[in-house]
Amino acid sequence: MTKAFEKIQEGPQTEFGLGDFNYEERTHVRQIRISGRNTREDGAAFNAVVYLEGDDKRAAQKFVEVNREELEQIDATGRNFLQDAVAREIYDWILHYLGERKLEKFETVVREARPDGTIWIIDRDRYEEHHNRRYTASESGVVKLTDTTPMELFESFGPLITWSNIDDHDCIEAHTPVTLLEYYRVSPEYSVEPLEISRETEQGRQTEPALRKVADEAPAESPETPEE
Image (cartoon, rainbow, N blue to C red; front, side):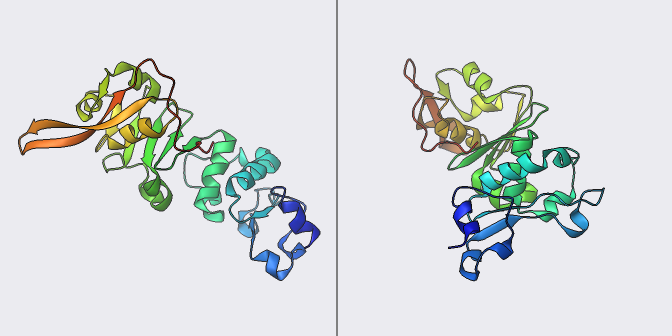
């Protein structure tokens, strides 16, 4: 085992390059490296980070730590060279650690908060597999909240949260509200019980998912700890 490979067992590193690993080790090593035309405007390259495969989140955190001043000069509100230089998951975590977004990832949904107060609740498969269609609130799997927070909404609902409850709020933009219901179900901040209700529609009696608030109890444990 090389010294470099021994060190990245502890976490992402900046003092090594791929050449410091042997052939077998390199199959398990990844790097965040911005080079060539993707250098800073003054011609100096960003500090590279090498890390073990699967350690993307900590690698992005390290990359921000050693390149913060340069990264803060990038306009993250539009298309930029960094998006083309790194994998999308790495880019998302870079923005998270820069403070441009606040990410919480659960098993089935992702919550993304922006500095302007906008909050997105997005189906996790959609978030990770369909990058160009994450923020299309007119499609299923996407909920956009403006001028409010999920907690403020939750407290405004009665003991039963249904589709019609959610549709009544002007601050919610969504094709279907099921993604917001799913967020309340998996987030440890809320204590709820999933159920189905039946109602009459023009097409006849139909069932739909809903949530019942569990009163006077500690918040239920989340199925998993959110990735922050």
